[in-house]
Image (cartoon, rainbow, N blue to C red; front, side, top):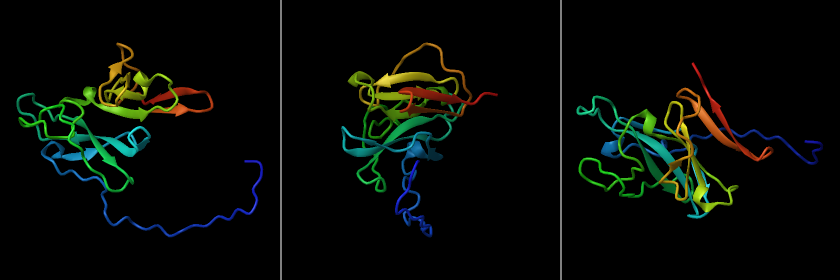
Length: 178
């Protein structure tokens, strides 16, 4: 910033949004809680906000662990979210759900999902890190069906981030170790 002209700093009192939380666990596959690592983002092709979040169903006695899945929520305004029926995977013998992945463990999650406006290839419009530990970079045309770009994951513990750097025109991966 080199110069400012007629700029005034004004601090406003915070106001809590009355309909908190904006996205609530309401389905059996969201039994324990919902959360996410990606922020909601604007999808210009669909003209809506999209949020890929994690849902945590009850303990799976057969497999002996708490499964996870990634789900889709959409909104026109970023406040009034809907969970569209995607119909890809079964939960309790029904595909009437918004699950984008079958139930699995932390290694199966779409950890970070980004809509990429920079890539000229529409088959690579979406970028993702798949898995909570040593994630696999992946690409997709539709933001649902991802193809890993490598066979071995990136080095990083269960906390990592991916973002596009406009200045260098490349993606940056930050991974925690140890």
